[in-house]
Amino acid sequence: EAQVTQNPRYLITVTGKKLTVTCSQNMNHEYMSWYRQDPGLGLRQIYYSMNVEVTDKGDVPEGYKVSRKEKRNFPLILESPSPNQTSLYFCASRKVGGDRDTQYFGPGTRLTVL
Amino acid sequence: GENVEQHPSTLSVQEGDSAVIKCTYSDSASNYFPWYKQELGKGPQLIIDIRSNVGEKKDQRIAVTLNKTAKHFSLHITETQPEDSAVYFCAASKGPGGSYIPTFGRGTSLIVHP
Image (cartoon, rainbow over all chains, first blue to last red; front, top):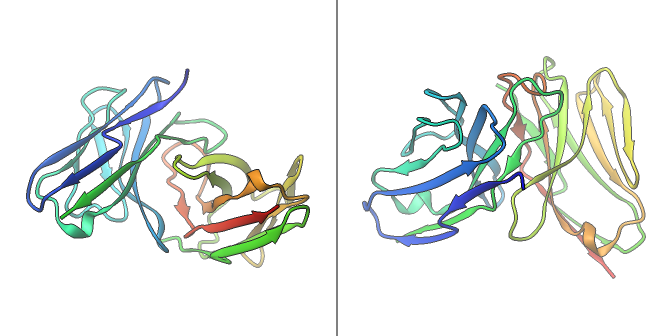
């Protein structure tokens, strides 16, 4: 089954404690992306990657890091989480060069930073 | 950069009624407009899209219209059903696939009352 998986689905942590949210896709997609979703603000892109070892900032990259060492994985790293990073996070992937923006989204990770 | 405005933020209708969600965009170079549906507890899923060389597109009970001159596009859902209840996002980009990154609207929460 074609899918994007994220782990963990729920996470409560404290300020300053480094964490990683993993994202993996099994569709051999070149493009992967991270979004955060906040009430009233919709989906805002954090980082994206067009292929292995190619990453770029989205609209709200501050406080986040990513890496793309393998095509299927795109982890999101919060080196020193702060309460304003409490949010719902989605990973997405799609094929580069397709004729539709068929982004496949993961199920989401709800992060709470105390 | 691109700015996408979406209205209303909440829409409540009776089962069987029609629902219309409107979006405007700012960048005249945008030429691809996907719509996503997000059900509770899940990631967004592409439901319909339209390119700028087309004025209207239908898929069963959903349709999207585009007015390129006025820079606005709308999602129309006819004969609404309770399972249509979800958050809907519009987006705009300079093209599907490739390196084009969509800008999302803030979302519309559609509630269909039985």
